[in-house]
Amino acid sequence: MIVVSRILSVVSPKILAGLALLAAPAGAAVTFNLDLNTLAGTPPSTFGGDATQPGTWNSIGAGPGVSQLVDLSGAPSGVFMQTSNTLNGASGGSDPLRSDYVTGIMGVSPVSWAVNLTSHPLGQHTLWVYASDNTPTGAFTVDAGGGPVAFGSLAVNTSLAIPINVTGAGTVSVVGPADGSGVIAGLQMAAIPEPSAAALITLALFGAMVGHRRR
Image (cartoon, rainbow, N blue to C red; front, side, top):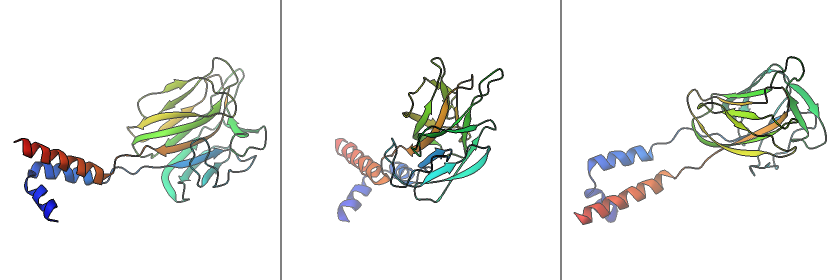
């Protein structure tokens, strides 16, 4: 305690105020698993997917609607998912995550598939997208508030880890190719860990001590 008192005695009130801000809790982060379409069942909680994050899986059917997602512990996450009204369900195997999926509509009047996450916490996250396309020119887009970014076709039964920075209204949109091709089987969202408040305060105090000794 004596050492801490000596350190604080040489730290200016402005620095102490800054340290208080560092110690304040950051915006709530969210981590969840999402399986779209349930024809092949739902992944067990022991399955971590490509994100290696086991826990509860949200299992959402192919039809339209709004659903509140739960986090890995099964508690309400505060994030809502809405699919486009045109999603069709399909299944091509027994893998509960990758074998059942939703598709857009191809043909004379194609409609792309779309999955929208709303009320999502802001900040840095990693989004795993399980989507594939059956045309060589197709692409899906991800928009976390800064405008849509296009990603090329994925091979079947693979995923892509996409770093995103959720901004604005807290909406994350994943939209399929405009020609209605392609499928999406699921999503995984993980918050990027931030330095702990204790580590930041220790570093700031050390810098303040160094600055004081130099004076």
